[in-house]
Length: 111
Length: 113
Image (cartoon, rainbow over all chains, first blue to last red; front, side, top):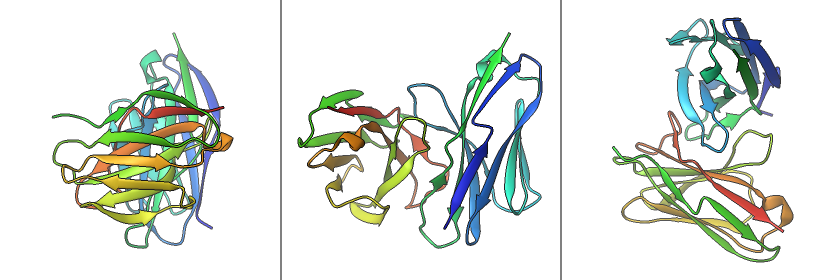
């Protein structure tokens, strides 16, 4: 069964304290892996798509990496405005298959 | 560029009632997907509409149904509401029938009492 597991469930950081969020997945062929940010009371906002092992994408203080079994979202020198829930999703390789989301990691950054 | 808009933002219904949720897709997008997000969970795929036809469905019962209109806006209808239907219902639009790079609305928070 296709599955996405994110860890930790919650993460508290001090401003400037770098860390990583993990997304491990089991899927019968990976079409793409997606990272979204979700603020309270809002819909998810697209961050990155990764397609193959070894690929990396960066945006401001965020960097996403992908291996054959997991993805990491690295947060460098976070700021309080980075506080949000970060969702990972995979799209299996079968044509037209929808995204399978993990439960997310809720990040809190205090100043 | 207009983003994805959903209405209403909040709704309270009683078990057994029916509900209709509405979504306007982002300008230029002809595909709308609906997701259900229960508290503390990730979004779960309900179905997708592409050019007014259902284009894939998740593991939801037939009492969840939908429509897409010629202007690509969409409705989600849920009949015979159950307590477990309480959730945030998210609409996402994308170009050309895909699931990549979804643009989500802010959702409709449905509470079933």
